[in-house]
Image (cartoon, helix red, strand yellow):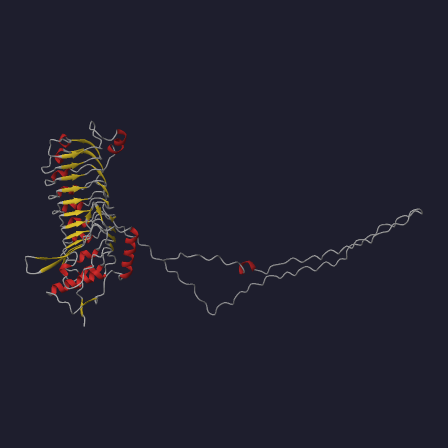
Length: 482
């Protein structure tokens, strides 16, 4: 009789989640990816979870070296059951008790006396072309992976909202969602977790950056190549552990917050290709550890101070394609200096490859007050209390009731009597005078004339016929809701 293991699906220790495909595979088309995602959504329950009594049948003839490998077998086969497209038969050898030989599975012996299963599942860069394979949504059943440490589903075709299930793993430290088609908002609780690295770039997220980012303990976070909007949160200055912070290629706006100078450990800060305005804050000169600073392709104005260009560890400073109108000599590109800088596409007089005066003047002369460029949340205006509705007393009831007043019926008009006057007499012409030489003429009988028709009485409508027999109004069509 087969052994039934209940409540243990996905119960193994899973640290890294990814799979590498061969170079011979071809990418999924958009239609194929959409079809697979639809199948998945139709198969899973509404919340994307499996019932608590979900069971995996284990052949009793199989023998395992220890219970941990048996749990790994259960988890891997539960995973295989929810794979909706395996075009390369990657899981074809996922049979038998020797899970160490399964494609994509490796065992590592840690310093502590226990074995841990590592499962790798991502597509890799092959011949300079990404091979997209996995698609669909990240189901909530993954919440059962209680020992998840590193979750990497990058370079695939996952869709839907941010997979909040990842926030239910207490040990998660590394989250990589890059190069998918995820969209919507970021949950504020993302930055309240114990994550050390968050990679969100190259998706379709389109919200603002949550203010909770100041509570994050990450060392690296990338928001790049999405559709994030709004201002850089002022709480960014509280990220005392962050080393790399990337915002490039979004729709960010407003001025730099002065608190950005509080990033004492940052080495890379990239806000290029956004819509930032105003001058560079003086607080940037407090970032003694920064090595790469890229503010290019924005609408920044003002002067580039010497303090920023003299930062001790700054090696690469890109300020190209803004509207800066002056820079310190220390900031001018010099091949003999340690600092590599790019200042083209600005409004520097006498420098090569700059914007013309007609393009610069409307922006350079515009006054920007950064105190109001990033307004905070609008205060909630309480609704005015409406005055109480006066109570209307009903009219008094008299008993006995007064006799009803009947209106007299409308008069009935009889039609006028028909006119029986005789028709007017017909006068015959006088007899002709005959001569003796001409024969008498033959007269045709006079034409028969019908009497005039009797005068019809006028047709009167019964009273109130307009109100009683009016056509009903056309039916009001209602919108059909799907």
